Length: 266
Image (cartoon, rainbow, N blue to C red; front, side, top):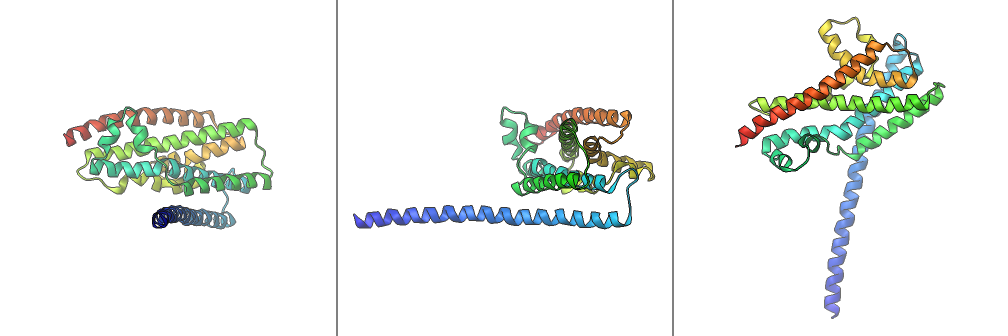
């Protein structure tokens, strides 16, 4: 009887030890991943502080420029949390045939394929960006209203959605290629253009201007709406038109591309 009890106690202890070890592993992973994200967060702050000590953005005060930066931080880490893992995993699923499982489910395949958790450390760093944003608003005494905050959140979510749609379009090109490459994340690699106001790109060549201006608007517009800065109707109208076009085209292109995947796996 005693041997049986000792045996069960030993098994119980081993299970508990494994469970504790696993939980500690998750916690340590989260801590190290968060520290890694926070290091990049600080690098953005340090480089931006140096930039502001040498230059100024036309039409933007120092406080407003900092609000733009922290909006960029929130946007970037929110996009990584919501979108990045789904983008990279979908490329792997196409390569390994794992997309068959997603297509077999009675839910929109695009939502399952692309919206996967990208790590709590990204979400935590994004929340940290919100804290810095609030501190900046208070420090520079920048006034905002409840309405501007609501519009800010809506436009920020819309910008994340635009980035998702652009990622879907680029990733779907892999259906037409002989090999799957890592170029699908090129949209995320263009994030540096979002850190600065869109009006600073007015003097560069037209093709470069379109590229940088498009990505910059994803962060500049939410910031402008939060601070209630003057903005042209054409700017907002162009943003909405682009949102509608990229939403429709990404869905059509995704559905059309899936047919090539079906024919290739049959």
